[in-house]
Length: 105
Image (cartoon, rainbow, N blue to C red; front, side, top):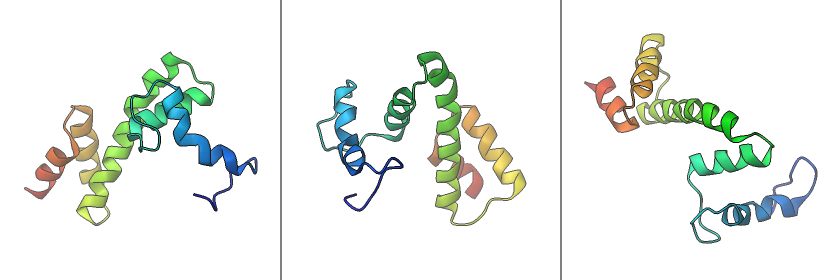
């Protein structure tokens, strides 16, 4: 991460980002990785989005990431029918391993 440069050219902003999670009330110790949902929620909050906007967008963002997890686990591009199946199953609340089991059956 030391080579990373933020869009504004401020290396310190990127290096300090894990510390911001601790300042936002995340119960993880400093230096530990945050889960994707907490990280996205914090980033949206930092970008100025309100709680209502974050609350309505976050489930869709998480489903998109879960669908990508399914594709990566399958190890190949999914057909249009498979993508539709994955989308519907995730919307119904199944987790990635359950969706994978359905695709492989």
